[in-house]
Length: 262
Image: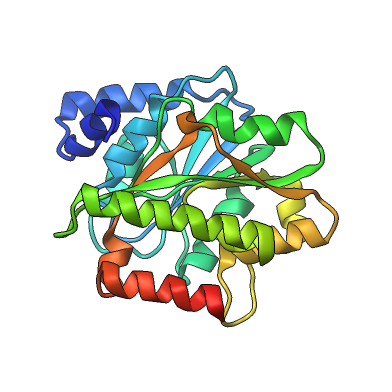
């Protein structure tokens, strides 16, 4: 795991002075007219959100960037910490990732929307690398990137290395033979706000995912192709808690295989 990623991940308890410095860094990213809005849905994320915000605040970019945290009925200090860190924090009382992402999209002021999650560490060049294809090529409608796992359970990084290799293979199969939209995840993707609103944002039919369905809508409505950002500088690191929630790596692998053959 890269040293910068590890440094942010381990900094889960910041002092008041460090939070004050983070506040200044977050605010320094933005002027009164942001070009980019990073939207983070959050539900009970007090243990990880400062790490995520610190990694985003450490990005190198000349673009004006606002960070919007959507508090989705958190019962812990998520909102308090997000405000202390200098972000815009809005509330969405309808529970669920889709209402939270749609609320963030509606509140965002930027031309470009970057989707992030509150348990993910972002590299220094993530903002620039994700926005460049959208800014430089009108034929690109949505971008997504690569990711690796930060183990929080018993699974080791060595094991995840092989799982991630397998995940790369499935993404290639999706892109080449099936549907590339299946590769798009909400914690590492981006699109133009105006176009996202025209296709009714993240609203999706039952049985589908909000992020992949948005990619389908943007492409199929003529707003541009789905584009994978392959530069290693844009690869994000996210915790494996979703895999643990799904029952562990074996079940997650079987779920991925089932999706491939279904």
